[in-house]
Image 1 (cartoon, helix red, strand yellow):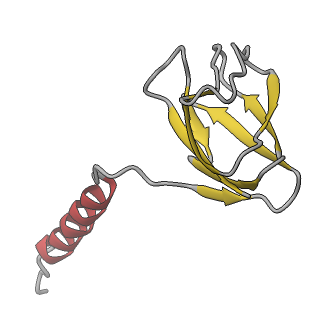
Image 2 (cartoon, rainbow, N blue to C red):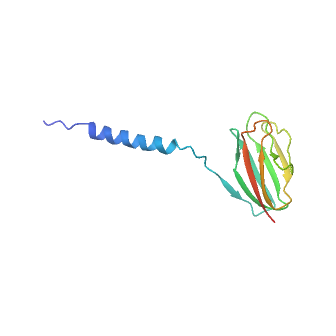
Image 3 (cartoon, rainbow, N blue to C red):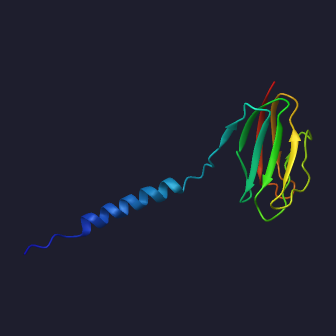
Length: 121
Protein backbone atom coordinates (compact mmCIF):
# COMPACT_ATOMS: atom_id res chain seq x y z
CA UNK A 1 0.00 0.00 0.00
CA UNK A 2 1.41 3.36 -1.04
CA UNK A 3 1.29 6.20 1.53
CA UNK A 4 0.20 9.59 0.32
CA UNK A 5 2.12 12.39 2.05
CA UNK A 6 -0.06 14.73 4.12
CA UNK A 7 2.14 17.78 3.71
CA UNK A 8 0.33 19.17 0.58
CA UNK A 9 -2.88 19.46 2.62
CA UNK A 10 -1.02 20.98 5.54
CA UNK A 11 0.72 23.45 3.24
CA UNK A 12 -2.64 24.50 1.81
CA UNK A 13 -4.09 24.95 5.31
CA UNK A 14 -1.08 27.04 6.35
CA UNK A 15 -1.41 29.28 3.28
CA UNK A 16 -5.14 29.73 3.86
CA UNK A 17 -4.52 30.64 7.49
CA UNK A 18 -1.80 33.12 6.51
CA UNK A 19 -4.16 34.78 4.04
CA UNK A 20 -6.87 35.12 6.68
CA UNK A 21 -4.47 36.55 9.26
CA UNK A 22 -3.13 39.00 6.69
CA UNK A 23 -6.62 40.19 5.83
CA UNK A 24 -7.57 40.59 9.49
CA UNK A 25 -4.35 42.34 10.38
CA UNK A 26 -5.08 45.36 8.23
CA UNK A 27 -4.35 48.61 10.04
CA UNK A 28 -7.13 50.57 8.32
CA UNK A 29 -10.29 51.05 10.36
CA UNK A 30 -13.51 50.34 8.47
CA UNK A 31 -15.90 53.25 8.16
CA UNK A 32 -19.60 52.66 8.47
CA UNK A 33 -21.94 55.22 6.95
CA UNK A 34 -25.65 55.42 7.56
CA UNK A 35 -28.04 57.76 5.80
CA UNK A 36 -31.26 58.91 7.35
CA UNK A 37 -33.99 60.24 5.07
CA UNK A 38 -36.34 60.76 8.00
CA UNK A 39 -36.44 63.43 10.69
CA UNK A 40 -34.80 61.13 13.23
CA UNK A 41 -31.61 59.07 13.34
CA UNK A 42 -29.68 56.99 15.86
CA UNK A 43 -26.07 56.74 16.95
CA UNK A 44 -25.27 53.65 19.02
CA UNK A 45 -22.33 53.51 21.41
CA UNK A 46 -21.03 49.96 21.69
CA UNK A 47 -17.63 48.71 22.88
CA UNK A 48 -16.24 52.26 23.04
CA UNK A 49 -17.13 53.07 19.42
CA UNK A 50 -19.80 55.15 17.71
CA UNK A 51 -21.96 53.46 15.12
CA UNK A 52 -22.23 54.49 12.43
CA UNK A 53 -18.87 56.26 12.26
CA UNK A 54 -20.38 58.67 9.71
CA UNK A 55 -24.07 59.57 9.91
CA UNK A 56 -25.73 61.42 7.00
CA UNK A 57 -28.88 63.38 7.84
CA UNK A 58 -30.85 66.47 6.85
CA UNK A 59 -30.86 69.71 8.85
CA UNK A 60 -33.49 69.57 11.60
CA UNK A 61 -32.97 65.86 12.29
CA UNK A 62 -33.35 64.71 15.89
CA UNK A 63 -30.48 62.35 16.69
CA UNK A 64 -30.90 59.80 19.48
CA UNK A 65 -27.74 58.41 21.08
CA UNK A 66 -28.06 54.99 22.70
CA UNK A 67 -25.25 53.97 25.08
CA UNK A 68 -25.08 50.17 25.23
CA UNK A 69 -21.81 50.16 27.20
CA UNK A 70 -21.64 49.83 30.98
CA UNK A 71 -19.77 53.13 31.34
CA UNK A 72 -20.66 56.78 30.75
CA UNK A 73 -19.96 58.45 27.39
CA UNK A 74 -20.72 61.80 25.77
CA UNK A 75 -21.39 62.88 22.21
CA UNK A 76 -19.80 66.31 22.01
CA UNK A 77 -19.45 68.35 18.82
CA UNK A 78 -15.97 69.75 18.24
CA UNK A 79 -17.57 73.03 17.06
CA UNK A 80 -19.75 73.20 20.22
CA UNK A 81 -23.05 72.84 18.34
CA UNK A 82 -24.24 69.96 20.59
CA UNK A 83 -23.20 68.12 23.73
CA UNK A 84 -25.22 65.32 25.30
CA UNK A 85 -23.38 65.48 28.59
CA UNK A 86 -22.67 62.12 30.25
CA UNK A 87 -24.96 59.35 29.02
CA UNK A 88 -25.04 56.57 31.59
CA UNK A 89 -24.71 52.96 30.45
CA UNK A 90 -28.01 51.65 29.10
CA UNK A 91 -29.46 55.17 28.72
CA UNK A 92 -30.15 57.49 25.77
CA UNK A 93 -29.94 61.20 24.96
CA UNK A 94 -31.13 63.32 22.04
CA UNK A 95 -30.04 66.45 20.22
CA UNK A 96 -31.02 68.20 16.99
CA UNK A 97 -28.65 69.05 14.15
CA UNK A 98 -29.65 72.36 12.63
CA UNK A 99 -27.11 73.62 10.11
CA UNK A 100 -25.65 72.05 6.98
CA UNK A 101 -22.06 70.83 6.92
CA UNK A 102 -19.95 68.16 8.52
CA UNK A 103 -19.81 68.13 12.30
CA UNK A 104 -17.10 66.05 13.94
CA UNK A 105 -17.71 64.83 17.46
CA UNK A 106 -16.00 62.84 20.19
CA UNK A 107 -16.57 61.51 23.69
CA UNK A 108 -15.32 64.01 26.28
CA UNK A 109 -14.57 61.13 28.65
CA UNK A 110 -12.76 58.94 26.09
CA UNK A 111 -11.22 61.35 23.55
CA UNK A 112 -10.14 58.53 21.21
CA UNK A 113 -13.81 57.87 20.41
CA UNK A 114 -14.68 59.89 17.28
CA UNK A 115 -17.41 60.18 14.69
CA UNK A 116 -19.00 62.68 12.33
CA UNK A 117 -22.38 63.78 11.09
CA UNK A 118 -22.83 65.04 7.53
CA UNK A 119 -25.80 67.39 7.52
CA UNK A 120 -27.49 68.29 4.23
CA UNK A 121 -29.27 71.65 4.03
